[in-house]
Length: 264
Length: 261
Picture 1 (spheres, each protein chain N blue to C red):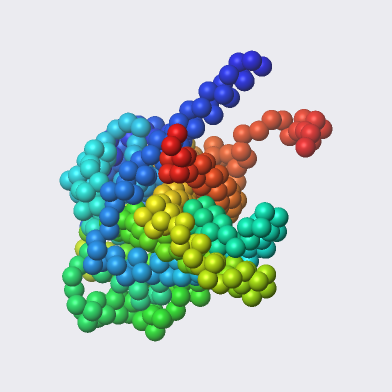
Picture 2 (tube, one colour; picture 1 turned 135 degrees about the vertical axis):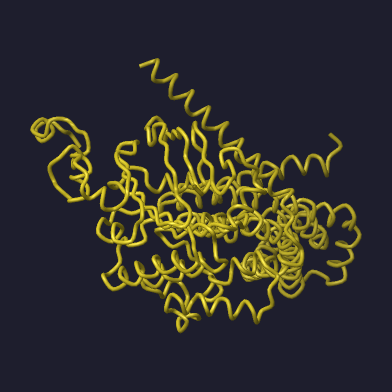
């Protein structure tokens, strides 16, 4: 296992996000973390990358206990991690080429010629070699996500994490991104951690799936097992049913009382 | 009711000390976060352009008009005592000792401090700081360091430019419109200004103000709530806190530098 969570609990204020969860990420596979919006998927990714510290429990990533790691080693470990944020996190003052070249320039002493080749190869792999001089503000959502992906893989990381990579993309961009995630995982032998609530896209490429709801892992297994699991929570989420144990409405008072008595 | 009041006071006190602690750690980190010279020199120069050079026009125009206004008002007072030839001395003392450092710093806090806060806040909102950190690049060293040092370098220089422009503005109004003798203007100024005391103290003041502006602006940007409203709030706070700090610190520095108390 390349990453493991042991009895990890996390609270935001007084709100419980995770309650002693345990999770293992196998090396070289695509592991998906799924669940309804607001269940803590992104928080889990931030815990795994050491951006957030759990209140209790232990997180092991590539042999390091990141709940007990100094800054120097954390940054050293992060050089082996690529992360694709939902907002892409592209540097707005750098063009596409410089965005992708950024980690290379920061962490290596390669010549400009080599950096140029490396960046162009990565941009070509995401189909955006021709967009190298465009500023991030002029990119579409799908293109920005592909640039962020090129930047995330430019140093050939051991682990790559995707935070909602398909959110807000058109079907063609989703198809391209799905193919890229799969190809990159297989060809570069990366470990992929994919956080998403897009069921069909995620299930189609994942080797293993964890389903999170209300601070707990409610199911885990390979795609086939999860799809066929006889569990009302899992069924509701995987089939997108309106009625079920996962409430659509945020907890509230009686509807009629609110309509009659609620003062603005 | 009373319990709620105490709870509220307690919460706010804890929050205040929490923020103070955060600010203290940022200060310590900024002080020891001297960027790698060869890798950062380009970034520092880049920031010098944005925070320093682009503030130049504001500083020059303000300096010129403040010098001219000061000259007219000073002339109106001094002429009552027949001491209008002392105008150069009055202008130099007030501009070099007080107005130069204080007004330059206030303008700088409004123009560059607020833009630093907004820029860092926007980087936080769009996850640029997080993505930098996840790439194994310390955002403090990469983002904060160059900005911090650019402010420290540019503010004293801008203040010196402000002082010179003010004196030149006052000279033109005083000599060519109010009829002050040009020789008296410069010689009275020369006789009263001691370089090591006045100019050096003025530079020290701006250096301290620059430090405070950089600290507050960067802190407000880094710890802002990453929403458009949060960035707006942080930007306002940055200007307000910087301006108030400048006035308060200036008072104590003036006591320390120019009195025997």
